[in-house]
Length: 552
Image 1 (cartoon, one colour):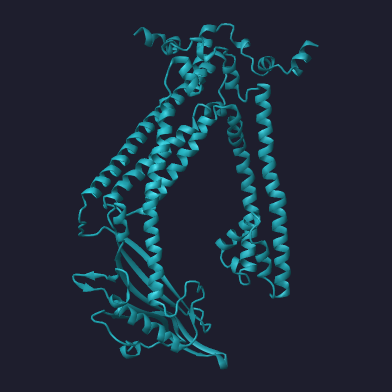
Image 2: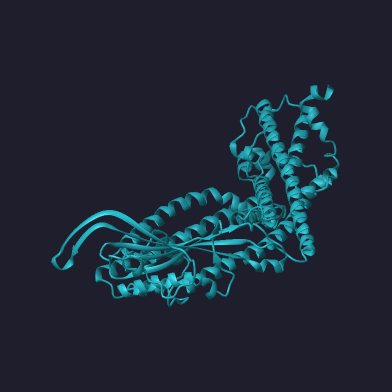
């Protein structure tokens, strides 16, 4: 009867004795050694405030992380404003080039194309004349690229089949699929009027023609950064205007693509630049201080991780020696603090990004995109790292424990869900791609289906398939209905149930005081409070286990 009472008891202490028997194998163990080791483990897992009450140790890492949040956020905002000016300048110049070189272009014109040979020649001639008269047309500081004082020419290239005899009326054709390329260079020696490629021995055989490409390089300087105490960058817009006739459908699509290259200006002079130099010095000092703070944080976190690994080894040896037990992998992983690893990654990214930012500010580097990715990711990790300190409060801790406990099951669940999702993506791409613009490419299908899961574009997805063949229309209805029903009503509901079940389990464990692991059960038997004064001698623990080292 007493055994049954023990089995059904709700007392946490009795449950500890039932689940983890320490006394059976400890008859010949010095209990003073065990108590000291429990105290050592308990101190390791204390919060910074508890460690302060236990040994008067100030929470330097906590204060440093708070300082880092303020510094790194300020640095990101400063760089974000500079990066925004760069992106805005690039976008506005790309839009300007489209209006300069595409005849009759409008901002909302997504289907820019021509349908007759006369229109093709007119558009190519328009591009050539606009390029020749660029200095007189542009209202910006655009200019030709120059090499050794000579302006870079405009290159006009056409790609076509080497041989082709096509007679659609007779349903016959004779074609050599080998592609040849012919190019013509036009130097902007002087402004011309009504330049025409017909006069330059450059003719187009539209039955064999695949594409016409116009290559030109336009250079400019971003002067708006001067007002924000930053040195300007020099930009080279390598522009390609494509006349696409690969489909031979009678519709030649025209597009303008830019490869933007940011360079350090070779020679510059800013009048009255003493104040700007002082402002630049302050920015560089601020960035250097951030590098120093992150370096100190990196060293402290690496030291804490190494201490955790050392204590993990001591814990495994202690249990093997005194209890003849092998420590489980889950207990070993509790000594590896994932928050410290996150901070180490964040500090590494911040240091690298700050060094690149200094190079950008001094115009040694121009890698804005790489720098923004590094600083943005590091700032995200720094703010996520705040959750570690919120986890010391019970109300917040249960949420963090739920995320950690549910993570393995969530990964398994998502693996299965992704397989179903990919099956719908491939099916929609193959079947609906020719009939629906949102299913033209695999990436577009994935984006469209993800939007459907979140309740977006459901109506437009249905309406865009009206007027298609009955079989395609019927398949699209079955396809969309089954996908929405499966993912919205079943997959998402199961996902939420998975998180909810884990939350209830963690909540019940905290309310009943049930330890989640053997390590926690071992530590819970230590009843010494942080302010008891029994944690003031950190040397005693090592002397208990390594007396020879203390004697020496």
